[in-house]
Length: 636
Image (cartoon, rainbow, N blue to C red; front, side, top):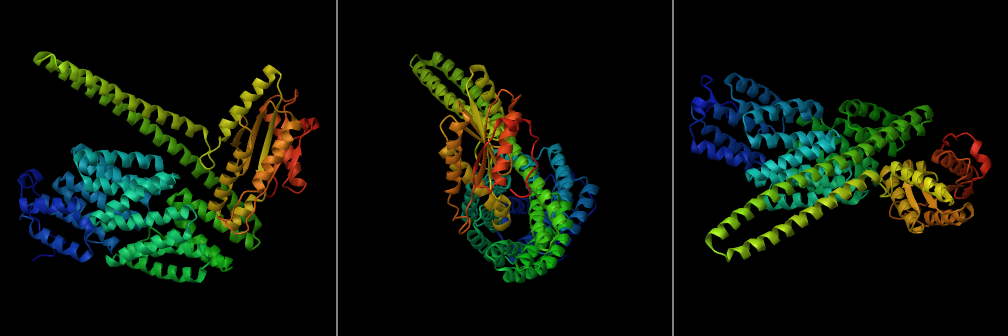
């Protein structure tokens, strides 16, 4: 028998000539494998089933030979990604020559999957886009959904979570409409990943739990392994390294059972960061050396940047900062080319620490500024993408509401007509259905109102702390200032800055710093009066607007906030970790031209509080109104 990976083909007949006649043996087996069975098979069983499928290809049937080869392209090269790319190139050329557009779509998706691992995810987008367009042209909704799901995964990896979720939700609708439960259930994992990377940890955890249940129930080891890895990443995001390590270890067991070299290497790479966070640096380096060999053996370069970054973090933990900088230089080649801002922020933050340790202050400042820019860009993009997704859900809900209304109204009219034609007693049924219609529409309208309310809240809320964002608190301050002047009422503002926040980030990491800010905001809200308003206006800086409050009245309020911050318990983040705040207070004066002038005086008072030792409240005086804006202190 011929090599099963190279089924003999006759002349390149068109699919209509040889592929249009049903071949039950091949068609049934291909459908079973293509729609989910192959996901659950180990490597040995997969090869056996592919060989058996090759034997079912009718002689001279170019279309089915190409379908077989496309399935082998995706599943027959688990440990040799370069061979997968070669098979995709050869298959695509044959499909183009044969005029077989369905096979062209499948081989484009296969080549894109190989490119994701060999070069960068960005390089895979072209094939996914071309494949989706071709699948739409031949009106094959299953292949359109497959392409949207794959493209959504790539966009998520590149940081475009809003676009990713839209692609993934569109794929989900197509799968559900076609009754493809396996594909729909497996796609839940992709949606979970996008929500995690967008920073919506609650939704991510919910979808990941669904994905794990599906994978265990159906025996889908591929989805189970990916779900366990994502649950580990989520635990890392939430600063739970022990749980992350446990998830990666479970994923490793699954990968070893399936003899998948790339998946084994991926699980080992995941385990490295929890070890680093637990200060097991030497063990992490040993694991990373093994992981490098595993990825090299599989021909997989997709994780090289992260490998080098983790190696640098482990060397830095051992105090070997020169070696760490060499690792970071190698990591930068892959990470900066890949364009993932989350990874770039990780790299710049880690490199700044090693630069500072070696006395390279200028380089450390450059990397710190790069980190701040990348981190703020990620936060801003996540915020806008959350709004984009919610806006999409509102539009979809509105469309669904209208469709349901029209459908129910038509059904009610039809039933009413039948009732009038048959018997008066059916009128009562029509009335009942009308009441049911009103109840259904009422519930849908309330749901729509809730989504619109959430969208408005998202546009005015800081996603990290849950308090008002800069734009919202400044608009509130301007309105309060106009109100105070119109009625002749007093108005005061506080600017609160967390002391030594950079030290917290350097010592405990960015995730711990985020948790500190969230707890500080919560403590301040609990200490404020009911009509006061709190907002975040910078990295670790907050603004409080105090209506109908004079400077003398604002002073004890500021002291209460300072004491509330000092009392925050941070033991869950780091043993012995304490946080304090400095506060500047200013009252609205006739000389204040606008809110900016009032905030400038409060800011100068804050600067004075920091200059006098921090953890204190400083009141502004009217003479400060003419002083210039201060420069940012060297350390906050």
